[in-house]
Image (cartoon, rainbow, N blue to C red):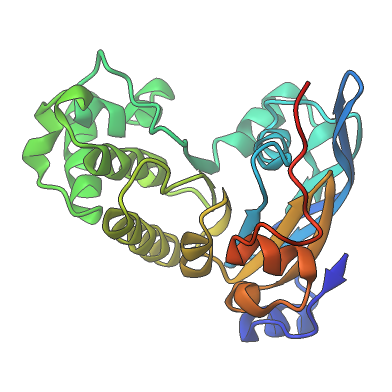
Length: 273
């Protein structure tokens, strides 16, 4: 892995203060049969910062995210949140950690059978943290925060455009005011203008909550807008880690080929059999 010497000012202050990474991954491995997907991943995400993981289709970005979320059990390695290895927590302790995490899924993953306001407040209602009257008021507030009129709350997800569905999904992700947020390909299926709008909303919401964020994407424009830091995953390894602002001139041949969309370079497309 080639680590960039330059760090953001916030990262420097946190490092100097000896801050514990919000998320620390060491030696993470995962394979499916003969296919090695993650082969010794090391990553740190400092509190209050945003990390974007880039890489081609099938590079293991989603598997990495699912391992952190606890949806997939890795074969080896450790994942620590606030210094506690979540892979060895009891079930109830693991659920407590998960309750602190907000997730924006790639395709929104809204419940078609529920009106928008119940989608936004679904987690709070499911955990019995709020009654239905307060849930509606809370949903209205978070819909406003993502630029939607509260009247949208009475509609079904099927009545919304793709961009509006993403906003609703973002409102649901932040409704529990999580201190960690994950974003899975947040601009997939959106035109460039709406993608930029969603990215700006994500940045605004993360800053307002003071959350730590991890996003996975192959959209380089989105990565540069969302991330403080970026890391590139290729063939199970982190091959570069540095400021997101340096993505277009990283000095790493693989990263440069990927970010510029060049056919020629060290990354060669493999035929699937």
